[in-house]
Image (cartoon, rainbow, N blue to C red):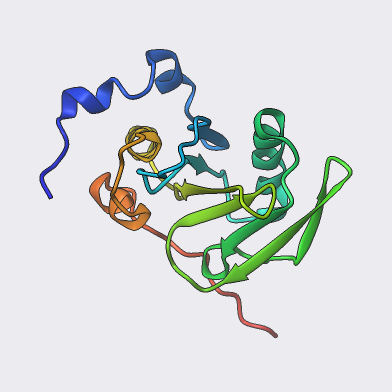
Length: 165
């Protein structure tokens, strides 16, 4: 698949967004379509691999625009510790995890509403993160999350496993 036109990519996000993107940012494409032509609905750049510290901000941002989030699906190999649920803004959010290695987080607000977000690794440079996030929110994106990370040079670095004493 040929690389997309670089001049087109630069226009995917407004200039103000390019300046504001930093660790802890989520960018969402809130317009959903029935055909789900694109693979991803947005992107998230957490500051760390601590889901208890990072997830509340993402859930709060999504709840503001989409309504209450009920469930989150995460790659268990990408996070330091994963609880089975968190209480965020006085609501229980259930956390499903499995070692899928797909560089995404799945957010659900009901049985049929599922949003798939690219997870930009915390170590990514601002330029690589902005590029990856811009590609993820493109409505006609057909590139898998892992390939977006490879193409933008962010790579995937898993948390360091600690040995039990």
